[in-house]
Length: 303
Image (cartoon, rainbow, N blue to C red; front, top):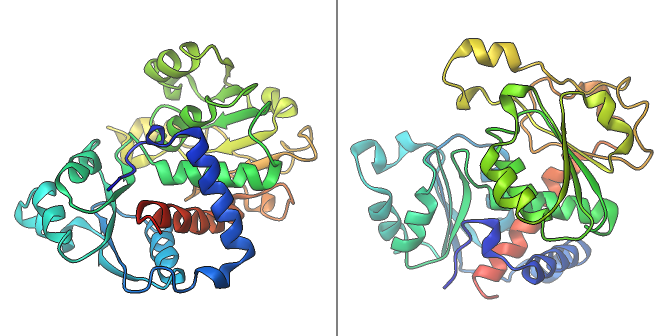
């Protein structure tokens, strides 16, 4: 039995296998319609989510399986003080696999140690979000055809953005990647990510506060929202929330084949006028999230 808590739990070859299987699911959906018949996914979401929870549920239904679970902590026995370990021990009696989101960093790891079925980390605080990273990788692969030798711009909240941290870690294993880190001074990428990933692996990277200056060199632009829920005071959030707003005007100097991504939800960091630009891939990204989660469920259930 195996769980997925951190993107580094997967070898590069395994990520390539998951992407290949997701590609096959996209091309031959009918071959997968009953593969999880009689299997049940438990979605244990102790923190609000729309896309992640529904994509897991859609993934399991499209594989012919069933879903049970809850969408907020108040709906679970954690509201009565039950521990994560006890919750997953109980849920292991009902389901075959668990997808868990939790506001506390490390909670899915604790769950995986107590559960008798695979646990997928669907996001833990500002820490990890490995299935979003797999979604991002599938999006890049579908739009670019490869991971090597890309200039990847990461823009917005790089301090608290768990999707950014996980994507940097995942892409760092491919050759010729360059990162352009675009953020206000207060929301820069944490030093531990710079040291443990960028410097440790000898990667090419630069920091800037200007999206306009970075734009012409980018192959990928990964926009993120400034996350109100990660801030300790409202003043700092209000001051920084509109630091970067992507508009058609700012895209005039961008490459014709730029891939624009966003893990969603967006607030106002991408103008809706950008949605009709053929380079905008963030809603395709949502769809790819379903397919890569289908591939992951099959891998962890060994089907």
